[in-house]
Image (cartoon, rainbow, N blue to C red; front, side, top):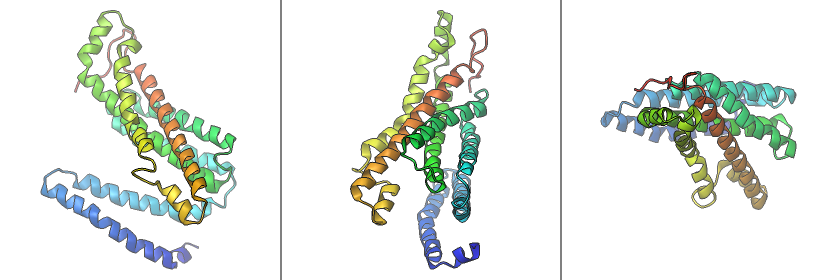
Length: 262
């Protein structure tokens, strides 16, 4: 089966398109080296890793579409764990970052996926549940990373103010409230900007694909907004969950900051 896919003329055409897409990426690597930005290794590894991963999932997607629906839950659960592994690395120095990330991503994205599946917005088939669910989980990953990274920065830059609030009698949660608010707002900037620019600056890939495949453009627009609504909901829930969970872990029982200044 895999041999047949590789020989498909469409796959060969896609390989040429991939090569073309790599040209500007290689140019960025060259500029990084020229400007001594020291990003060549990270960009290069990310490009290769992304290509290998997307080709791998493309190769097995045909097999996934033939499995029973119950496997969808296991596939999405594995994606959530992988998202937590990737995301928690942005929270270096924060206590129990992996478990906080896993809990936040699982709850934030899981609630959205289950609710929208129950409401009928996501069809109960592997063909729909896995791809749409993966988009929601990825949104949770990005937001979790941004929220924890910003919270870590706020703990460093606002440490004196936080300790002053604690000295004045504020609880850990109250002392950290302004920094939590800033972290949540910052983590939601990308998805909020996406909603603001939807249809004006960009036409998302799912909508474009539906229109190109012959779907009613109005329905394609409606369903794209449903997807964006799910992404926003998952992002917001994940941001609130991860900052709330981490807020209880950065303080000792004596209401002292566990995180050392960098």
